[in-house]
Image 1 (cartoon, rainbow, N blue to C red):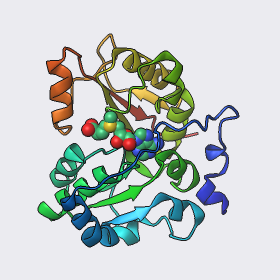
Image 2 (cartoon, helix red, strand yellow):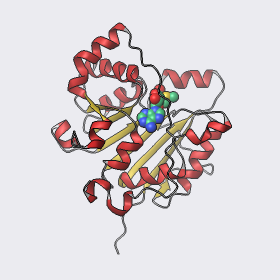
Image 3 (cartoon, protein in one colour):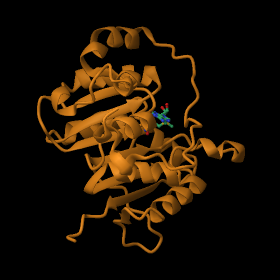
Image 4 (cartoon, rainbow, N blue to C red):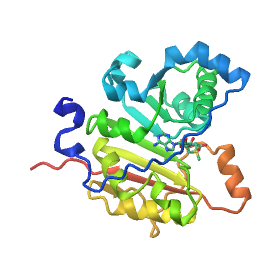
Length: 249
Ligand SMILES: C[S@@+](CC[C@H](N)C(=O)[O-])C[C@H]1O[C@@H](n2cnc3c(N)ncnc32)[C@H](O)[C@@H]1O
């Protein structure tokens, strides 16, 4: 694999990089509507992470979108409620939604069609593999992770996606000034995320509040998922960290 794709020294995996995945493989049953959408739309909008990682398909967003525009990568787009809304609201940016859950991707395909979105592509597979193996350093305008699986049991915390090693990886992929935007309704996970981001030398918190949280930016729409969390009494925390700009030597 070329050094550029591997990202040179910036992409070298942290010596203790975990390979416990942040998801478990589950049976992906489509509804009839999802199966239809998949059949019709996946060939046009979908790409397999495994193919990109193996090199069978080139990682080439300018070719996928037919233009060069700021590129935003969302990890764990679920059914794509906020993904589609954010892509529609920002037509001058291009969006990659990475998800392992196929019915969710099928749901998002329907949203892409309904809203006639041209600035969104779907990637099926593990976003960590994609980031580490193919996304070039300094190439992303934003990385978004909204409501990642909380893995609430202590023995499962190792499965949480947002941990220091992951934050270090994501930070290298951001362009200077690019943002890592996280949101969760799990208090313990939120504190862990804040600590991981605060400890990453490539990032600075954009929040000036004492506790470090950011008020939900208007561009992150409130989703059904989030409304349920609130109705069950869980506060939602947003974190917005910026990749520090390169300083002149
Ligand atoms: C709790 S859901 C949240 C979905 C969505 N962001 C929302 O706010 O409704 C988390 C999603 O992350 C996906 N996921 C977890 N780890 C992932 C990974 N490493 N790569 C891609 N998707 C992942 C899961 O399949 C799941 O659909």
